[in-house]
Length: 141
Image (cartoon, rainbow, N blue to C red; front, side):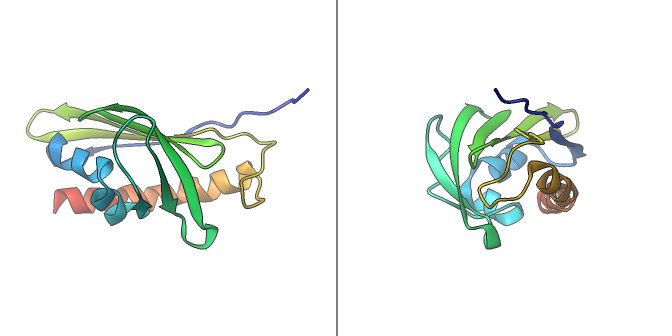
């Protein structure tokens, strides 16, 4: 019997000075995702579609689209344990509320590359700050 210890999701929210359609294009297309996150291979925004993310030194990560509701939600499984969601909400004056949720963390689980979730969660939590800042720069340019 497993006595797993769930860790909190990584959540990043920001208000972008860009219309929802522009932000949606950055989170729901291969070209958009490549520009600010990781290059996907075989990406199609269709529920059930499988693709890979090029995670650099960690190799190719298998992914599968689990939810899509244009232009407000895209969720996919990432690797063997994680989920990643991009939630958008249109705001007045052509602005967009953006929420990224990276879930599936468990203190007692190792990643595919043998690292404890707790260690990787800390690194990725810090990494997401720079990644969403890059998204913000791109959509507000």
